[in-house]
Amino acid sequence: MKSFWQTLIGRKSSRAEAKRAGATTAPLSEQEKKSIPQKSPLLAPQQLIVGCGQSVGKQRDHNEDSIFTFTTTVGGEASNQTMGFYILADGMGGHQYGEVASNVAVRSMAGYLVRKFHPYLVNSSETLDEPMQDIMREAMHEAQRAVIKAAPGSGTTLTAALVLGSHLTIAHVGDSRAYAIRLDGRVDILTRDHSLVKRLEELGQISSAEVSNHPQRNVLYRALGQGDILDPDVYTAPFPNPGFLVLCSDGLWGLVTEKELFHMVVEAPTLQTACQNLITAANAAGGPDNISVIIVQSMG
Image (cartoon, rainbow, N blue to C red):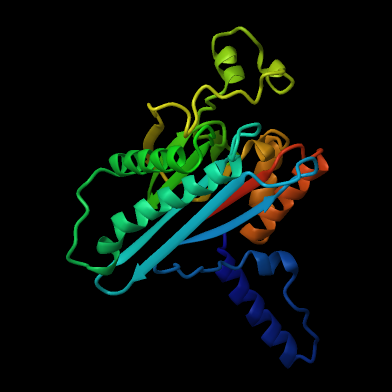
């Protein structure tokens, strides 16, 4: 069997002979054009592409969600460092200063991480020997102390992702979520909801179908700013590449199915468009809560 290139060369030779004989020729068909091997240059240095979006929703008069994104790339002959941290918080509705709690939480955690990583980023001789999980856990405790001081009696969820090269470290408390969307069609939830209904479901006392309509579906048993002891979930995993990391509040995941999430993220021309489409879908479904989303993709 001839290879594509042998066939193409033979076609060109036949066309040249036909031209000498005074015959006309036809351009390559679309199918033939598509079958020509295409080489995509490797994007260097590796970098993180980010999109984010928020909406107050259709039934709230103010926004109690807060988000923070930070991305940096150092590329050169001697080094290639890519780092980002992405934080999302949903102030607890019905509590005093819910919006203050979420804003203080993301700013405090972000400030801790910036201070921690700044020497490592600006000085190539610096090393960072502390485990990423320990850093994220202490950043969570920093946010906890800040919320208790700035907005006593309030509370907030906090879901944060630290990306360092191909490694992803998640720190989480509450019922906001982190997802890994993979191009083979998988949508994996990377966090566990610290909600009463989720716990009842885990214990087999209610079914998954009863969760969305349960009267206590918004009650959390673990949140930032609530009590003196904080026990966040912290773990490290490979970044979903090829794929996407998605952080979102329950105002999004409670209304948009995982199938819809996959298609809207994967099929959008840009991450910002994906964020806008997801928010539009949540609002079209009623928008009963604030909506926040952050999408991250690794390139290169």
